[in-house]
Image (tube, rainbow, N blue to C red; front, side, top):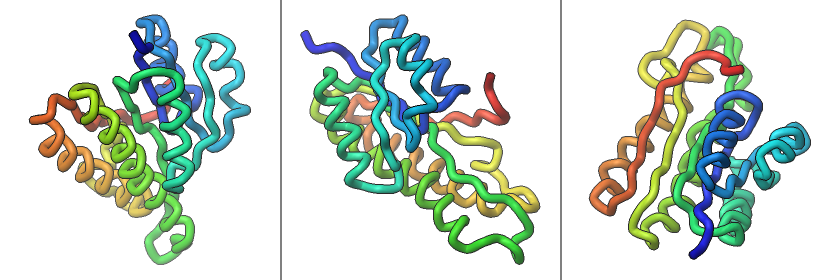
Length: 181
């Protein structure tokens, strides 16, 4: 029987590292995705996870991530924890920084969700999990560049849940505020 795989996109030292440890202990082969995989070397050594350099805002890069996951086994869980963030007064926000935040935080979620859905529909089960923040529910002064991608990610998760739930695929969006050590 093929090993079960968990992909964690937007891997870092906080929530993603905790999930990698937990899923690894539960027998999953964990595939971590980050723009800079060097920062994951200690976590990879600790957990036996595989790190794949990935730009979640690039369709080809996300496809390569999931091809690597396919080689590790059968996808069961995909977690999207990547985030683009830019803050400041609306009149002073750098349009390119906001565009990048949207590409990473919302479009990246779509790309990861799409690749995961293709695999999970084929196996008739699995979970796709998206992490949000209170900014997914309401925008705050000075946080338009963060709220926009988080709102978009929440809408994506809701649409995917309604489409994929009847196909035995659980899609969830979690509100998690603050840094996790």
